[in-house]
Length: 169
Ligand SMILES: CC(C)(COP(=O)(O)OP(=O)(O)OC[C@H]1O[C@@H](n2cnc3c(N)ncnc32)[C@H](O)[C@@H]1OP(=O)(O)O)[C@@H](O)C(=O)NCCC(=O)NCCS
Image (tube, rainbow, N blue to C red; front, side):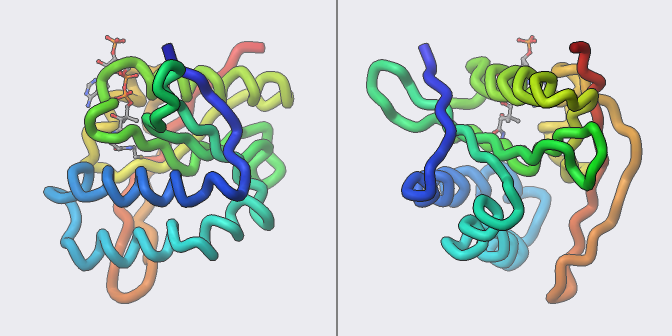
């Protein structure tokens, strides 16, 4: 059994810790070690995480094992992204040992439920075009609607698909 809870500010180190454990295996064959370090610092420094939660209104949900309380993974989302009826999933990461056990599906479903409660009609996200997670999202009902190359500084690019899933109220 898993328990899903909204992360408070004091839980942000747990998020950072999961990201640092998960990124090397996720992106080791896609991005250089230098780009991985650069992006982790940009997105997961304590200051960056605080800004996401407090100023940008990103909500983090943490999935934990109900018996042991051990964290398994997290998702972050933003309701009504840029004024559209779209909930943007900014991040979703399961620890390597917790992948393939249905936790990611539970987190997506939880975000979908909350999005519908807020009258949003679509889920959207960006994913690296070479990430195996593309197949996971397709399985979850997302499809590719666009692609974007995003310059993130220091000569690095994010080569993403934009994917969306329609929601039924
Ligand atoms: C991608 C990720 C979030 C998926 O979560 P998960 O808990 O591992 O996935 P689930 O076990 O809930 O899988 C749900 C379904 O998707 C399928 N699936 C999951 N990963 C898949 C993959 N790489 N290829 C094909 N299908 C996949 C599962 O087989 C399952 O299908 P089912 O309907 O037959 O049961 C997780 O594996 C992860 O954190 N990966 C590394 C980090 C990452 O890439 N994050 C996304 C960044 S944009």
